Image (cartoon, rainbow, N blue to C red):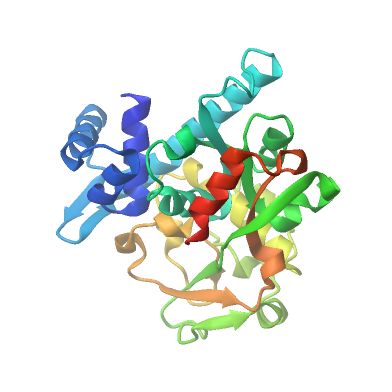
Length: 310
């Protein structure tokens, strides 16, 4: 098992297409497919259901996806430690580094946006560092990363340190049972959601083992931040659960799943999905940000221009 194989696997899981993933990594589709098959043989399980219209993660593939995200998060933290010890320098960095975190579906959005960047754009290649939520801004401040991607309101405490530009919105997805009163709704406003479903047990399921769901106990849902907190807690709980049975949503419950974009359609085919709208863009919008003193840097400017067409 190699890091390159894991990167091929992650991109294929997000893009759900070997051809597009191969384009993203600048390799042939046969090379990527062969490496993923080798990875599956080593693990002893099938990670993908392969079909004419693309690929879907199997149950094992989804569980492995969460584990690989954790692996790359540890790699990113190791790089930060090297910078802090003076063993790596910003100037000697051969790659354009982009820091993000694994919650809020930021990483899959980033991969999809970067898949069409030309190889060696502006003389560089890019690398994505997956960090813990609170470490993204710190990585940019400490010159571990050139730019970061995070929710705008997470950066307010840093004042005027950063320049930023809108990156993408991340709509919150709700999962409800097919006969739930919201199943026929295409959306629901934040104020209505909070007024009608403020009790915390509307947002997670009782069959999460108590010893693993302690962080949710007593949590009151009164704001958007509470909802985001629940989603982040669920994202951390998911690798600890041995099955996805908790995605089977009873009719009287609402679930906010983590990283919805990478879930296989086959895993949620018994659920109805609605988007939570009515959220101010400023509150839930993700931004790409960089140190204000780096404004005008050719690498950063080229990166922003490359994303502009999106």
